[in-house]
Length: 81
Image (cartoon, rainbow, N blue to C red; front, side, top):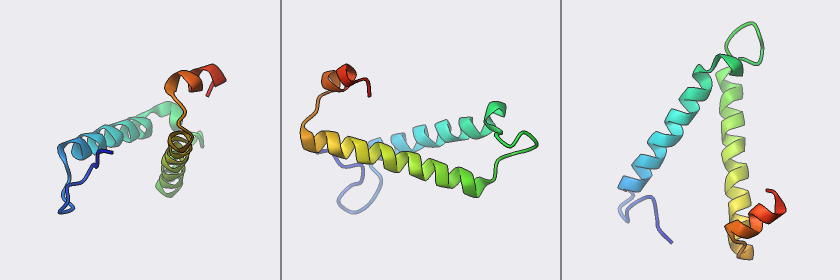
């Protein structure tokens, strides 16, 4: 399994790239006028942080289960998830 950090704890090229891509995606969500759920202003950043962390946790949990079960991408597509 590939690691995103080198043995000395420094960021690998892949780790830096992934962090930049995730940061850009989350910044785009914050900049999107349609995401202003409250209707009368910007969303609370504490709430945004909670939602973002929860989403990442859910993705990691699902992927961990799939890996443990040996589920392939084609099997996931059949199930509709």
